[in-house]
Image 1 (cartoon, helix red, strand yellow):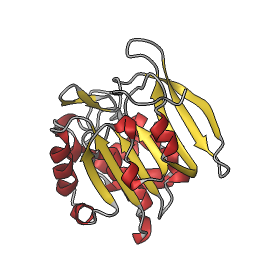
Image 2 (cartoon, one colour):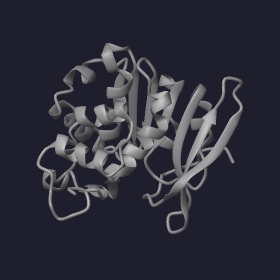
Image 3 (cartoon, one colour):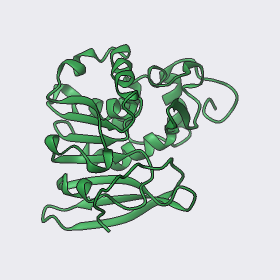
Image 4 (cartoon, rainbow, N blue to C red):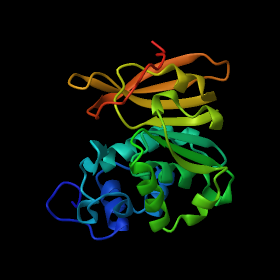
Amino acid sequence: MCLKSAMRCSTNDQFVDSLVRAGLCKNKRVESALRSVDRSKFVRDPETAYLDRPQSIGHGVTISAPHMHAVCLEILEPFLKPGMRALDCGSGSGYLTAAMMAMVSEGGSPGGAFGIECVEALVPWSIQNVANDNKIQWLEDTENFDLVHGDGSKGLANRAPFDSIHVGAAAPHIPKPLIDQLASPGRLVIPVGPQHGAQELIIVDKASDRSITKRRAMDVRYVPFHMQGTEVYE
């Protein structure tokens, strides 16, 4: 298997095939999105792009292991339908933001995906990554796709509300602005827990009546999410 062994997939399609065979990608829409966005364009070392492990992208930031991207996209899939709007907090290399955009813009639908990254130096690189993956049309449509510098724990109020929100690092608590910026209905997936302690992937659903429910998906291990003076939900 390309994911777990020393063998390396040589193409993005082989990589996604491996995810599917391993049972790590079960949803056809998620599979299609991962095929349409080449992970090798969004990492520092293309030679290791298709290994199932987190990788450094510089500045103390990592791109998550591929199986975690697949897991999060599958959790969010009901809220990544064509025409919906998505937010990726801690967008890093831009990879998951691009995959979310592939899902919400499926069939030419006017969906939107936006990434926010706290490390300013990563933002122009992530934009170039999208261009390198032949998605220049998204970069030209700034009303529906953008990668910006900012504090992800505060969300992106000027683009809200969002049907789906993904957080790519572990927060000590759930940031209240992300709850506030969720559409009704909407879904947030976020790792929660201390940097050196137990962390859980939490699914937060906001119903049509704006009531909030939370549930645990699995144990995880993520780098810390930077929260500076952000009001917490709990």
